[in-house]
Amino acid sequence: MIAAAVLAVLALACAVGAWRLTSARWPWRAPRTAILLWQSLGVTWGLATTGALFAYALSPYGAGVVHGLSILLTSAEFDVREPHDVIRLCALLSGFTLLTVLVAVLVAAGAQTLRARRRHRMLLKLIARDEPAVPGVRVVDHPGAAAYCLPGLKSEVVISAGTLDLLSQDELDAMLAHELAHARERHDLVLLPFGALLRALPWSAVVRDAQESVALLIEMAADDRARRFCSPKRLATALLRFGAATAVPTPHGALGATSGQNVMARVNRLIKPDIDLPAHVRYGILVASAVLAVSAPLLWLLPA
Amino acid sequence: MDILWAQSAPLTAREVGRLIQDRDLAPTTVMTVLDRLSRKGFLNRTRDGRAWRYEPAESRDAYVTELMLEALDLTGDRSAALTRFAQAVSGSEAEILRRALMELEEQ
Image 1 (cartoon, one colour):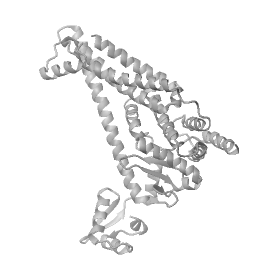
Image 2: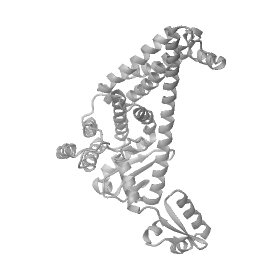
Image 3: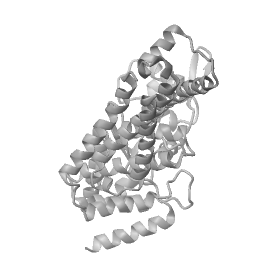
Image 4: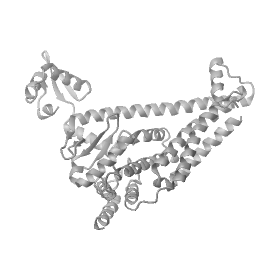
């Protein structure tokens, strides 16, 4: 029973922590650390919520979640004698449902992403060309501005002919450094579970804010890596020029309302860098993330 | 694919092979490529006697548009398939960005 209570508190703490983190500003000063904290908050929330339900349902066995589940699955018996046993049965069923939904959503999102990428890669093979001015980059002949990275085992950076005309050589280099940072650090894998969760719970404001925060943080992390190889000011002007050129005349449902503010936030970071978060604070957050991430699995194992 | 896009009428594998002048390709290679493209849905094929005639399923422009819509994330599904340089913004926000760009360039 204690394990169930602790897990429930942990799940609640993760939800509150995520909600606080969406409005915090320090993550912009240490995007990488914040991304790790987000990941461990997400994993712990999932494990703690399902764990709390299981721990409550299986409390009569007194063997903890993992052993309780194995006893349940081998004996295939679940006694329902008193009224509160019905509640336990409900908790068990919702635990299984939630776990199944979370896993299924992740697998489905992964499969859908892979499918979309395979088609995209095939289309690029048919349409895109190489350009001597920007070696290693695929160019699509379209007057509009577009620049992105198609992640995978062999990531490809793609830009449109419009972008080639729009940006100067320095700005192109800065933009390419940014995209290569995405490819190198596999930011798509960071974003995937948050996008999947958002698709499963589209009405949840916290999940939507979390997805948007993480999406912005990976951009900032890529900016930080890119500025080691190019002038931050060139990256900033590239961002502004590019952002202004991709504007769509009518507001579109697919656009985040904050996308313009996000571009400005990134530009301001590049021109007037805040002081980095002090090292001891960063390490403190890293340790907290690690403790958080192991706490839920330990509580699953604990026989209580 | 470019050869088929350039033609108005469906072609057989032999005709495509003849149009690929710059490379010395075996006719079976051309047939294999065409067959694979049609199985993936990029080409439509129709029986013509003992040969297949191939034509593009979509115009080149349609594919370019599809790529660009995905690149600008206008397909509406917030897909994590790509990581973009910057999200698309609305018209009024673009004005703010333009002004910031001018200020930055004056410095």
